[in-house]
Image 1 (tube, one colour):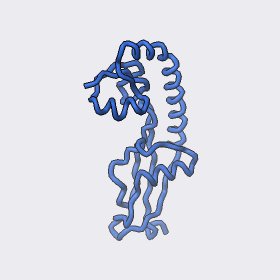
Image 2: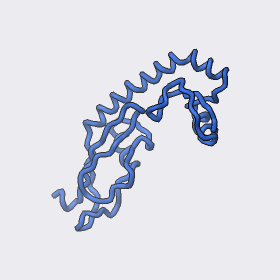
Image 3: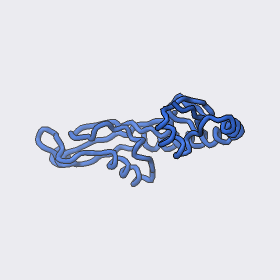
Image 4: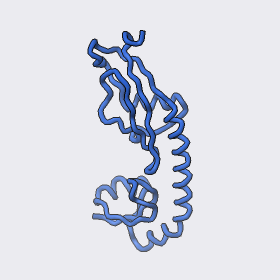
Amino acid sequence: MARVVVLEKFKKNWDIGSIVNVKDGYARNYLIPNGKAKFATEKNIKEIKSLEKSLLEKDQENKTNANSTASKINELKLTKEIAAKENGELYGSLSVSDIVNFLSEKDINIQKKSVKLGNKIKTTGEYSVEIDLHPEVNCSLDIEILSPKTSS
């Protein structure tokens, strides 16, 4: 296990400046290369304590941006026609990429990993998909899948 100091808020219970134990590979391969944490040495802990105020301000700004994006997404509804069989089973499917592309057409840019779709949508009907924009901010996008036959 590796001890690291967290540089940004994530995983809901990790605050900026928290010292946490994580698996070595997670620290070496993800947290440290992506600038999310540093090894918990005395030098790094002191450095982060001095930077903590600016890091908290940056996090607050990210949270404010996430809240405004969430309010935009909550107002949207994705309605899509996809060819389907008689029983409502789609010949195609709706994936995370389709959702991200729909939002980017509306000038809302999010990362694919923010969309919590689970499995692809493979039947007609109405769905609600969770989108995590910040550890403390999430929203949902309403989706309606229609068959070209049922919409007429």
